[in-house]
Image (cartoon, rainbow, N blue to C red; front, side, top):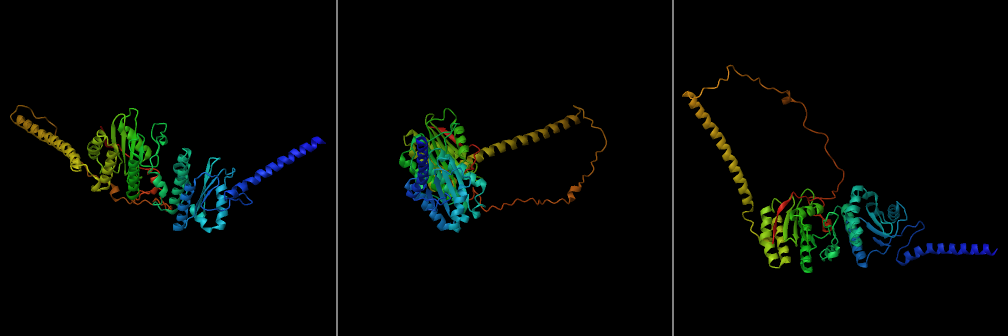
Length: 460
């Protein structure tokens, strides 16, 4: 009997513990300002619901300001929820969005971005009117390009800002959206430990257009240059990046630079308006690599002049930071045709290129003339020698040659040159516009720029 009482008592105590544990969850949520309904779904508590306590007050405030302004300007509600777990529920995001949509009809055009910290899962719930723009492909882009890389690297708040911004751009179609605080953060020089390389020895894109792994820029110089390049991108779409490294491990500097250009894809897709200034300290190498769309104006000769006339004197004189900033201003001035930024001589650049073409063309014409003139002279000499009987004429045989006229019925072909298989896309939004600058590239490169290896290299 005592054993039965003890067993029942133990069972009763365990039951109370379980019930207490279950009750503790909504109590904890209540303490943080978050409550759940009878189905375990969170009640609406604003556009940023950080149940897991991942974000700092500053980060939460930054997100709330942005999302509130987004809805005020566009009518599109976008929410972020950070929870410890989605409890294995594949419809976690959708259920919450449906619940809130009953309370706020505007959520038909909105979305919910959810991050589960302990599950390592992310999801997006989409309103009915958001499905057309926030396609599965663009949803994958938000996760793969904007959220997961930084989140995995420990930059969790920044990764959420990037994902929120990109989602907002997709839903609204407004490429000018930006987080002012995040932009300012990119002008703060990172510590050296934050620079990471991949398995191929290439530096990962940090979000800033300045990656000073060699630590040659002061904090003030870094902020000035990073801010200038962010503004250049936002106002013109031109993407110029600066990469300084302690070593390239013996790899030729131009090859090293081109590999980074290809990895970062500087410039906009289809426009290729990017350029990269690379500095390798141990080998004293300098390089400017141009995109396919910039090499026509920032020619190889002008790249060489910037290196020889701006960078080399600065590095030999111990004013590396000023030299880098001046070189970037020259690159930007030449690409955007802003002469106020250009200090190197622009005269002769295109003329010297043209001079080589003229020399080659002249040589080709000369040799062709010599060939035909020589052939005519030789033929005339042979005629004279045949007349005087020194050589005998060659007999080719008699008869006439006739070639029938060529007639093709295709000249009157009834086949139409019109193709009915024209391409039409019902999508009203392009995720990577080539006609306007993208504010999202304040946090990543343009995602499509290419280079054919134009530019120039030098040493100091």
